[in-house]
Image (spheres, rainbow, N blue to C red):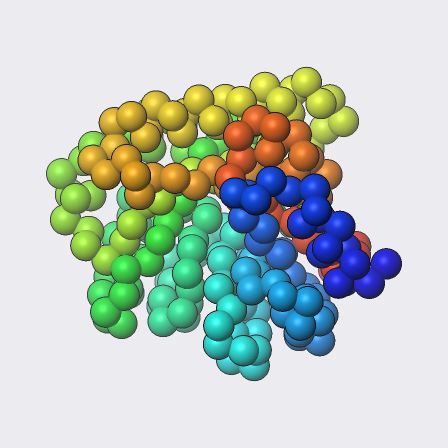
Length: 221
Ligand SMILES: *Cc1c(COP(=O)(O)O)cnc(C)c1O
């Protein structure tokens, strides 16, 4: 199936309120252009350099999402254009994003990455750490970032009930953080679900899915 057909198929299965991030990491610009021509405007990349290069070339009404692990010294390369950073996992990184956003007179939306998987390899913070950041007085001084929700990745397993437990856990954490948020209406995004598990994620309350291989085909690294 073509990229356009894949996109249409996925969009048909997604509820209207769920945002689709087309994960285009490792894929050539021509593939992104094909998705763009089919109407897709939100793309997710996991390397800042690669995202910046694609941003240069492609139409400027694309929303670029950074979905990968973020190194603090590279934030400056995406600060002029990135629209959502999914993988924020500590306050130091938030401070750097705030600093770089200020240089461009921007307010950058961020998600706190919560560790829900049992694997050691997945990044993210605990619920308590997320809670502390949202409550800390120094956080309210960061005028150039907006924390708009949470992001999480389930364990890589065939065990659906485990994945469901982890997604449900993220939804519960989201609800708790939202209930204590100073501006609860801006705290609205739960980024969870990938090609293999997005339908389950949506059933568990996801508002944003990050789908790569089901749109663009398998990746060759
Ligand atoms: C690569 C990636 C995805 C997309 O994975 P697929 O299985 O190809 O849909 C989603 N989220 C993150 C954080 C990723 O790195």
